[in-house]
Length: 225
Image (cartoon, rainbow, N blue to C red; front, side, top):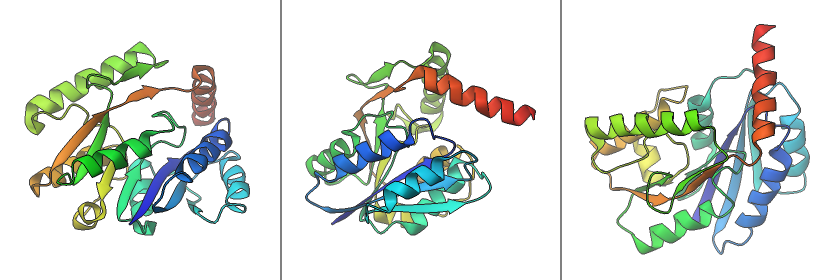
């Protein structure tokens, strides 16, 4: 069995070196074969340069890159096309779900072999938020509550990217969304096809709130210019 981890990246030069190296270190503990794919979604800073230097020393780190920012959905779709794994895990490039999230997904699949897809949820007991602005927490909680009531039953996290899929799930879905709507698109189509979707509790932690603020400020400045 082979594991593929996919992380979209856009202007993460402040944190990407540490995050990628931490992920590579954690993946090296796996008994299974693995690959780590970083999708450069048109970064305009030094993110691609930094990751390229790391990739030169790590054969299992692969880069998918294009010049124009297209959005998270497009980045994930390009990562899916490049993935070779029997299990595909998608997670943020800034390690905001912790270093052990990949191992936790794999362990949950082993304990629950009938699951087709697993979602990391901060809304389950044992999960939560750390160092995340209150407005972001409330937006996530209320948005997911509304979505849960509308269609998806017991699922508590419908809008997040941190997930694990058995490969046949991704292969069976015709995905079209370029932005964050892809998360709901995937669940909607997987749900319609009758796939068994589970969740694990997880903590979403912004590793350095000051760096997040700096990144957002830089992006806002670029937009104004």
